[in-house]
Length: 381
View 1 (tube, rainbow, N blue to C red):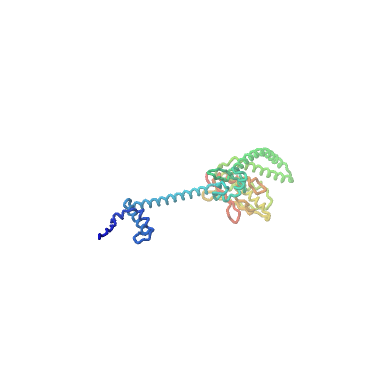
View 2 (cartoon, rainbow, N blue to C red):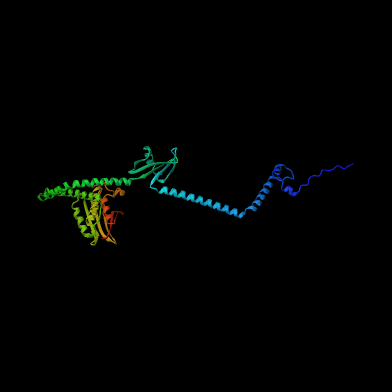
């Protein structure tokens, strides 16, 4: 018998197996045969092959260096963005304006701290469709509106100072005009009063004296009004403080008051450089204010005013102390045309501050147990 020929299986070289189609190999990965590689082993082998092949093409250290630079650069950009954002918010916060940014649906996109404190101003302006002036709690606000990228930007600026300056300028012009108009008839009446005093008997003499005091008071108000409207310039000359004390004592004789008041003067014998007439007006204002404060205190019939003047280093210092009524509104103390007194027009302390500033000085209400005003002026020629 002839032996049957055995079909020989083709011999597969290892090299051939190594370079076989990977796609056909992948199809057999799901079969559970002993001679087939598992999916996990394939992944691991593929990763190793990729890393091996990549390392042949690129330097791994160079890649890591570039990656590190990229990360650092991204951190730097993020930090700069945060810094610019913080700066932007800080600038908006320090602006002297309330700022609202409103979305198209009426909700708020952004509000700064001033806006959070100004809800009523916003609501009042909204009723007038913004772009208007609003009066709120004795302050004036200019409200403006702009649009950008579908959002409304609304700002409210406090213009109280500008409005106040405008009012003062108008009042100053009117007051100056009235002062000139009043001065002429007051001068005539004062002249007639002087003639009448010479011919007055004992009964009518006190009446004429009171008339002269009233005229002197009107003349003083006119002078203060004209000085305030024109501005102050100090003409400093060497003067004795004692002479200023004598002038104040004479001025007391022209002021009318009803209570029993003790005046204690303590002026140094020294000499200093100041405008005698202007500083006389300042001290008269404070002296008369002290008298009015004592008169306003109903529970006391006895008053006391102490006035001192001395030179301290490069300054001439004046202190005025009284036991009268306390200052009600310290913030409006030197506001022109603002007064809580029945007497006066509110120009006394405002004018006094102008005079003291012309002497390069200051006025302060000291926080003592006693009500004490301290006036300092520079002692210079």
